[in-house]
Image (cartoon, rainbow, N blue to C red; front, side):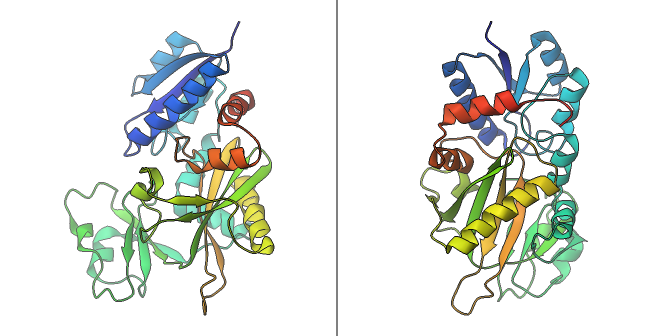
Length: 306
């Protein structure tokens, strides 16, 4: 009998549309591989739905809060359903950008200087000399990210908004100039390094998910030493945070004339996108692994106690 896989997708975070795309792409691949597949659009009744379905495995294609911050992982642990990607602690840790940076820094991974501050204080005066970046501590897909340019006289005034949806505490992070690099990890192996080229000032939601929003250069056209350093640091970050299955680490590399030459890790994504424009499937294909084979591997790697 074919293994029954529940593909968890959708949810109610800001990243719902991307998650639906990821989930349906993975579900289609699993059907093609001969699995029995149930597509689950996750709501707050997900535990009861899964108890009724009784799947052998859950493929977690959720993105954002509740899907990649340890919450759904805890439910799956309680239900005893083996699942893909990282476990409760590593998911929660990687999603909390300031805590993740503390762990990575302790593991010898270079990270950008940052601080936590109330958004109203961040709106009153520059918390650090510009340029800097304002980020919600627990969001993905660049939601709520604001770039403060070098010549900005005041901080972004939208931080005062009554309907600001990303919480009262924000992270102020030193802006790191340079090239946008990213590297996936599958199990205990670092994949290839992609340079992301976009017309946007940074790799925002549009650049990530819109067709033609960015170009993936694989392998990244950087020196062999830097290329291998990115792979080494991506694997070290994956291991330091306790990640399992597939993850992806994002970097900035400042090789501009007169630049710092620094290679900085920005964050680790424990639930990287699995859409037609996603990065990890590109890296896997470059390593000779088809999308279907990658998704099958993720299901075969699933476990509890991750």
